[in-house]
Image 1 (cartoon, rainbow, N blue to C red):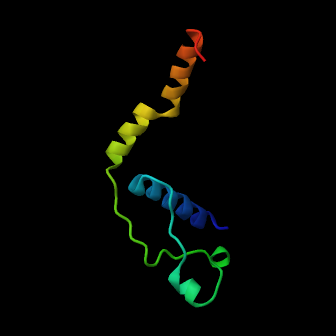
Image 2: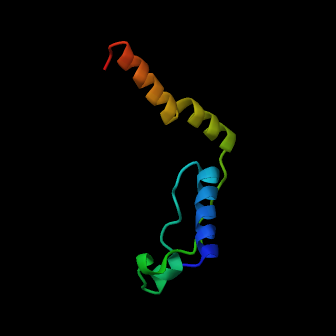
Image 3: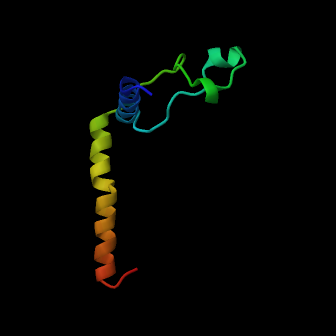
Length: 84
């Protein structure tokens, strides 16, 4: 795989996470299905998929408050207090 193609794929994932707030990618390509091909072999073009950007600032704020590092710190404090 060419480096440019790999970088394009990573950028696509970055945009998907930032724009959609999840990692859902496009579903089956209607043109691939119409040709009787398997999407696993051909991939998807994204044709017919619509994305609407979310408020990434709100997603980032939520992640900072609810992130794994805060959860781990809370668990450690409870452990030190004799909790679970």
